[in-house]
Length: 424
Image (cartoon, rainbow, N blue to C red):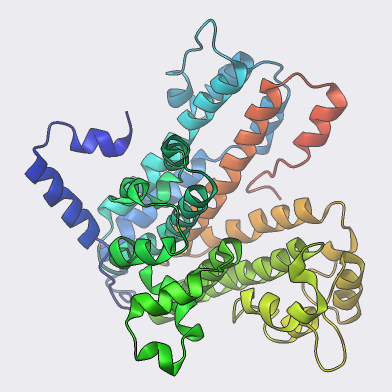
């Protein structure tokens, strides 16, 4: 039974409506700055101590090696009993006729439930600015959930497929009325109807408006908002829209961390600068071989997806998108050569295309582990979330690899992508 169903079990319809109302109202945004040195521990000290305690529950390099040496899922489950995941995976028993991939999924879901419980504990006990800060962490998964459901509705007429997409939605980005999206019909102005009746009441609605408003003309402003939205959603590229929404959220997180100030701003600036640079490189790298890599789309459409901050902003982004008669970057070799010639950040990683993705993941784990340095800041909460995503990605890879018959070389190749955390 899901956490949402457990919370509402036994409640009357009126009580459920009240619960949904107050859950919705809990997204109230508190403005900074945060408390000073004299009041920090009184307001945030307990939860900061808790999240630093959660840090000790991350898997170690030695534990990863032990997990990767397992030959069956039962051996893997036994190995996990010696870790913080033990109490969760021991509750999972395999049925005699159950397929291995389904068994692997249930084991992974059990591991994920540990993280969800820890994160929900932090959110439920946070107040004031920390509450808003943790809420903003959930906005990214919430945006992805809405966009993926829109894509699912546009691709199929089968309600069962949409319900499947809802079941696979990221639980961190859960929203009380997410299930009501099933009622929407597949049509050209789907996003318009969704926005008017559902998205407008969510905490991520302002990012959708940021996406649509720059396209509106004076003539559109004289008409109703639904007309303007309908005009710009008939040909919308949902993948690009999703990336734009995540960019706006990242910029909002950057501005909010600056508003909080103090040690939080010092730590979060470094973390968010890296996240902005990583997103800039990933957008560029993933555009290779796509229409977005065409020369006439470098300097506007692709550049539009780059965050407006970070160590690559603006000079590095200008190199990527092109300037004057010089075209933008269109292949990995040119990307590496440009960064190397100008001695820019990531130049070393960009010299090896084969290991670029893995190298960037290693750097990501190293940078976010620094969020636990120093004290009296919110950076450790952000780092905890990001590092847990890396750990869960590692576990999913291990579960999926062991659940399928593979030879030794193939397994070794797949396990190269496992990224240890807090390793020197």
